[in-house]
Image 1 (spheres, rainbow, N blue to C red):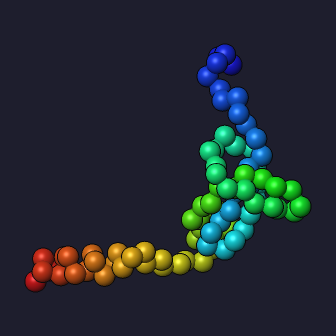
Image 2: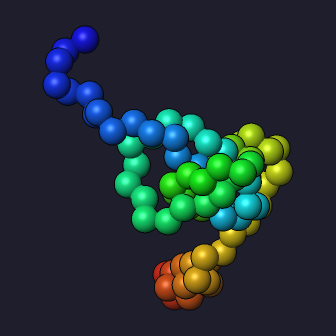
Length: 83
C-alpha cells in the first residue's frame, strides 16, 4: 500500500438509523459531535436517514416517503404541460 494516503483516525462509531432507531457500531473516520450509549458503552454517533434495516431493497417492503410534499409539487408544476 502507498504510505500517507490512508486516514489515521479510525475509531468505533455508532451509526443510528433515524427511521427505525436501529443502531450498529463499526470503525469509521466520520466526524461527529454527539455521543450515544449503546450496550453500556459510549460511542460517537452518526445519524442516518436510511440503512440496511429500513431500505426497501433489503427489507422487501416498499415505502413511499413524501418529503415536504415533493409529489404534490411535481404534479402541480407539470399539470399544465399534460393538457
